[in-house]
Structures are given as C-alpha cells and as structure tokens.
Image (tube, rainbow, N blue to C red; front, side):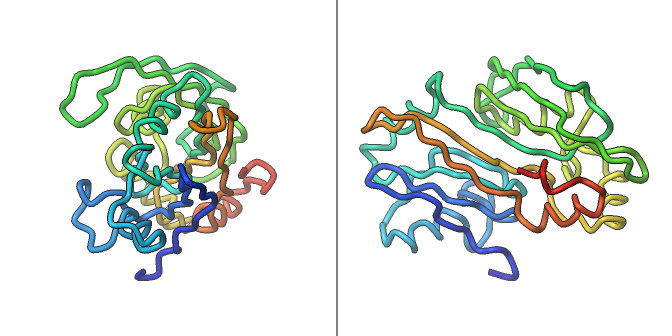
Length: 229
C-alpha cells in the first residue's frame, strides 16, 4: 500500500464492521481518484460485493470508521449513529492556546455547496506545548452533528486551525511544524465512536489509539504519552 499503514478491523458482527483507518487513505472513491480506497479494502476483507460506509473521515484523518454489513441494516445503523446517545470524539493538534473548554455553535453544510445546517462541537484543551515557531495545543473535540469537515472548520472558526490542514490551516506554520518535528499528515484523529447497537439496544463504543505517524511528532514537541489517548 505504498508504505501506508494497513487498515485494521477492530470489531465485527452481523450488523457492524468497525475499522481503524490510516491517515492518507480515502474512504470512498467518490471523493478521490485513488486506485485503492477503504471501501475496496473492506470488500476484500469481507469478500462482499458491496460495502456500506456509515461515517466519513477525510483522507488525512485517521481513526474509527463504521460500515454496515448489509443494505438492510445500513439505514438502522445510520439512525443509531444519528441518535442522541451517539458520540464522536476526535483528538487534534491546533495552533495556539484555546480556552480550557468551549462550545462552537456554527452552521455548516452536510456536503459541498449544500445549505448550512446547525452544527455543534464541544472542545477541551488537554495540553499545550512550548513549540516553535509558536505554541501548539492538543485538544479533544466531541461533535453532536456530522457536517462537512466539521472539526476542521469549527477549529478554524475560533482561530485555532488544525496543524497540517492544507484547506483551513496556515501554510507557513504547517511547513514549519513538518520540517521541525516531522509531522507529515493532518493532525486529526477520530479516537472513539459510540452508538446504540440496532439489534441489542446496548450502547457500544469503539476506540483506537493515536497512531505512530502522529504520536511520534507529538512526543518530539513535548506532549506526554498520557494525553495522547
């Protein structure tokens, strides 16, 4: 896979397949012209003709992605993901020092060019490092909706863009952090996702650790392993 870390199945039953996606891999061919995307990998693992992705992560974002195992189950699983008990947690490295915690209530579209809809994110600053050329912070963001590039756009909205973000970040700072600390990717990780299982009715949670291609540069910056998740 051209040096890219292999995806990993972290859970599988008759309804749900949970996958740990590496940074650099697109989920769906509709978003990219890549020869091989996560949907292809899931079909090869399950030996199914079709894969049914339930969530979307940007190419540069690593972490948990869910798939439904059948077409019939996809709508039920999607409803569970949109339910009040579903929680999506992200970890991100951002520019500057945000407040200790906050709520970002800023409408965003579901898809490019679509109408703006309510979008709410809650963040907590976990640690700040005295990095060069300016301080950087490690934050946890919990989203209560699933809009286009929500975490990335919301952090930009409060003037703390995610490091490595070529669309919403600061090019000069991204380049400086890459050259000084070896961060070669978008510093955004979907660390956990919880929902009510459509069959059992029980709440289940999937979580994955911060991968080495993000954790190693963070340690070089002075962040401790305890807060990396």
